[in-house]
Amino acid sequence: MNAFVKFNKGLLGMPLPWQVWVMLLTALNAVVPFFYLDRPEARVILAVMVLNAALMVAITGLAGFTRILGLGHFLWFGLLYYLWTQLGAIPAGDFYGGWIRAVMVVNAISLAIDVVDVARYLGGDRAETVPGLSEGGTRLPRA
Image (cartoon, rainbow, N blue to C red):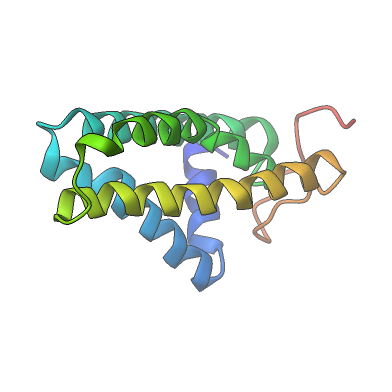
């Protein structure tokens, strides 16, 4: 199965609370930035989201829709640091400042989930996280 198709089928096959979580991440990181393309932070957030998505599709092609997909968000560590360094110049009281802070909180929570998922994967939990996506298992060597 094409990695892009499998990745999207995986997203659509997740339990509803996780789909809502992914929609929140997508809205904050890939939709709202379009309203602020004149601001460097918004452009960086959008660029990192595009890179994350491409990386996650590639990981899906290599390892399936498994917990290792958490590696796809590793760029958010750098993004969070960058945004943290910009906070002094971004007032918290307007929508833009609130959005930047919301991105930081939600992405940090997602990274915490990702760290747990990657640790579980490295610990041997290599099954597809959405039933029915597997096509003969993972193509990555087992540890």
